[in-house]
Image (cartoon, rainbow, N blue to C red; front, side, top):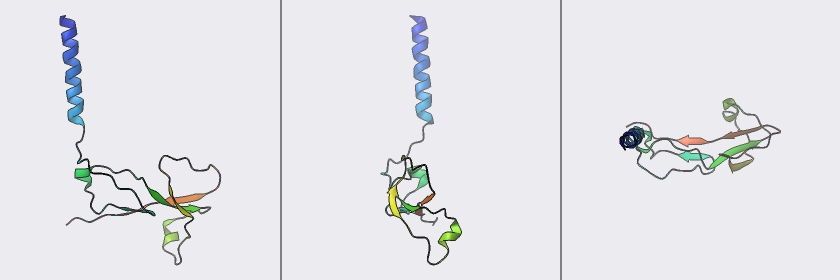
Length: 107
């Protein structure tokens, strides 16, 4: 009896400790990217926590691009907008995927 009480107390203590260590976020619904843009201007990372990069990413099939590629006019031509998170791309060929985000600065 005494051994089982000590074991139960230990398990409850560990559970309480682990639940106290978890970060508590606002539970605000996460945004998804639309046509390659993820608008985070109303997202507070301190209060709302990290965000998943779900949604439609810009997809450039057959192109291997650098940041300089987007500074040139005209820029590279998009092939499509696709959901890429959690999906395996084809193993052959080259492609560039990107997502742009909008954030609001402090102030």
